[in-house]
Structure formats: structure tokens, C-alpha cells
Image (cartoon, rainbow, N blue to C red; front, side, top):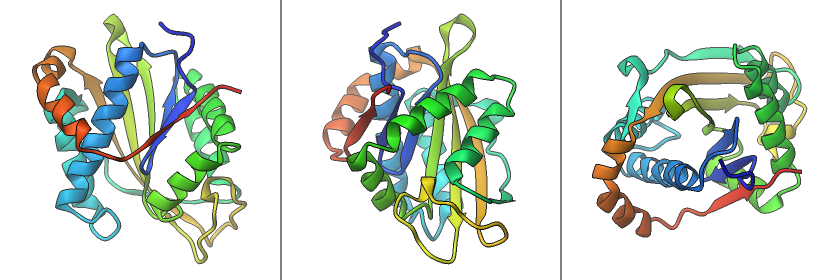
Amino acid sequence: MNSQTPAGMVTGHNLMSFIEDLSLQDLDDLTDCTRIATASADMGHNRFTNSQLWFEEYANTLDFLGWSLHEGAITTRTRTDVSGTVADYLVKSAQSMQNRQQGNAMIDTLDALKPNQPATLSLDRESLHGRRFQIIPASYGAQNNLSIAVFHLELTVQIERTGFLFWEWEDNLTKLVQQRAVFTLNRTKLEDRRQLLDKKIREITLPRFALNRQ
């Protein structure tokens, strides 16, 4: 592993959080595949008006690139009231999962994001202040397999706010709608797609922002 791996990454409306240090190759492959999947889904559907089909296309593209969808399923939509910041909600949600490291990783990622104005402004712009955004924790599992959970989120509020992740929202006025899909990287399949992946990533101008550890 590489100790210089950042705490996370922002690309488009995606906020990635790394539970442990990723190899540089896995880091590049993850962010490249995420950017390609985002661009592919954007070509087929409007993520703000047709999020269901958009997310299905996103998942299909990741699967094509070598990310196997767990049990071939995307979870149904769930709706939650949010009181306080979305950042705090994300940390509490991560801490409630069996992997306690995920909560600590989410704290590190959000701590690195908050003072990074270019990354925060980019996430605000690409997500339309939280109308559609994705949280993607990544970690190694058995046999060093890289897995990601993609949380597809919709923030429903009365007034848009800059820095929507860190704004103190009022209960009963703020809703968070969520879907989730879990993927595991098949490196052999990804290598079979390597030439296409390299070609497609050269066509994408979507920037990425490394969130360095504080």
C-alpha cells in the first residue's frame, strides 16, 4: 500500500472516501472508472430529472468496465429526515455499519474536504447544491479485492445552500433520499477493457480533486 494515498477524492458529483490506503493503480482505476460511468450515464439520462434510469446506466457502465454489482441489485429508495449537517449524518451512518473503520474514514474525508474550496465549490456546482450527489467509500476485502459502495443521494430542501454538506439543516424540512449499490473490482475484466478505458478517459475533462489528509 501507499501511505501517500489521499483521504478521499472529489470528481463531478462524486465524493470518494478511502477506508485504507489504496495502491496508486487502484486509485487511478477507481477514479477513472467513476468519471467514465458518470459521463456515460449523463449522455443517456438527466441525473436530476430521471435519477432512477441514470443510476442504472451508471451501474451498468461500472459493471462493463469490470466492477461486478453485488447480487446484481440496486437497493430500493429510502427517505430520511435530516437534522443538523449532512456531513454528520454521513458519519453517523458510516459508524452504524459493521466496519467501524468506515466512520473514521468518512471523518477524515470530510475534514479534508471542508477547507478545500475548489473541491467544495466543484461538488456544489456538479450536484446543484446536493440535489444529486454520490458518496463512494472504497476498501479492500478478502484476497485484496477492491470493493466500493455507491450511495446515490438526493437532498430535498426549501433553500439551496453553498457547502450543503456542512450546513445546519432543520428537522422536518430536509429530506435525504438514498439508493445503494455495491461493486467488487474484477481486475482481469478491467485489464481486458484497459485500451477502451484509456481511450475514454482522454475524452473526459471532468476534473478530480485529491483530498489530502489533515
